[in-house]
Image 1 (cartoon, one colour):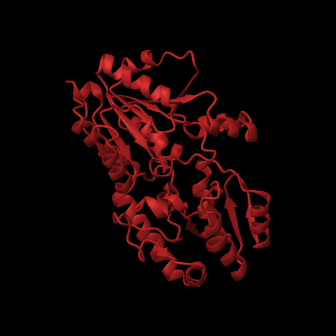
Image 2: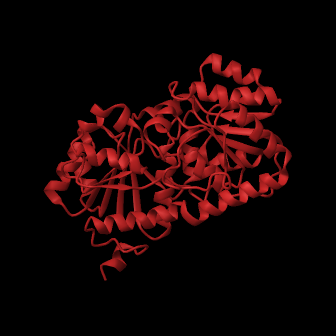
Image 3: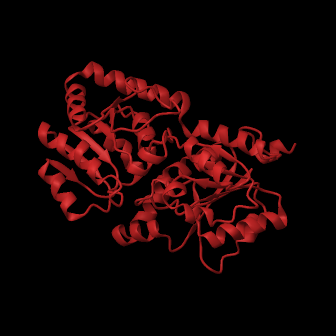
Length: 376
């Protein structure tokens, strides 16, 4: 099959975690013999910031890390209809410009030979409802959302014909244990500052416990204000800025544990949705301690796959326990990895995607079978 993905960026993961999952899905499709293309705006916010900070090297780095992926940039003169003409499935991410969202829908109406899906992996449906309600999804066959509570929001609002829960997952071709690397530091956290959506939580669950326990550690992420960087330094944590996602498995392996700190809109309004970093960390076989969120969909086995900390005091205790009990650390790492490999890899999500395409009437949606075989 021929897949076209409209992305904010597949080249850049600068403050753009959605790229991780899209890359993993496309890599899995390509590994199964399908064709997958990523279209992204030439002046996209994430790509522009990455180039400004790291220069052209960052694009070359992407090509080296993901040689099978084919990014195509577009501008105002780009012929989208020509790219859609031979597509079997088109997946449009919710950061796509609204006018282009509508234009792709009209292309579906005029030709109609591809399955058209809208993909939402953010919280704007509950935090910026007008932005989503203004989108023209009339000609889309369905909506993919990364949690059941978000699916219910779409259904209640009548956005799109139907909605499917399609959680993010780990690309386990990239994220896997690296037993040849011995940890040299206590704690690593990979996460952006997040527009003050979790600034208080970062202080409570990361900065305070690390300072009080005297931990060594590293923080990767962008858009940290000066006062936040100063607080990390005062706590004994190194802030190392942006890290290419391909380097994160090694960063996990160099530390003894990590943590998950969800953004407030997810914790309060989109129950059951963790960040993709949680899937990736567990796939890497590192013990994980999480700040509060509600696993209402039973994605994991809390207390076995990872530990929950309800507040900073519990985080301190859990950190102390995991760092001083090697048996506990190994058990958490093994259980978390087991759950990922059983349920939450990009292979699982591609299987689900073919089921969704079949439910939408796509005649080529035979699991794992290239289009030429499906048509035979």
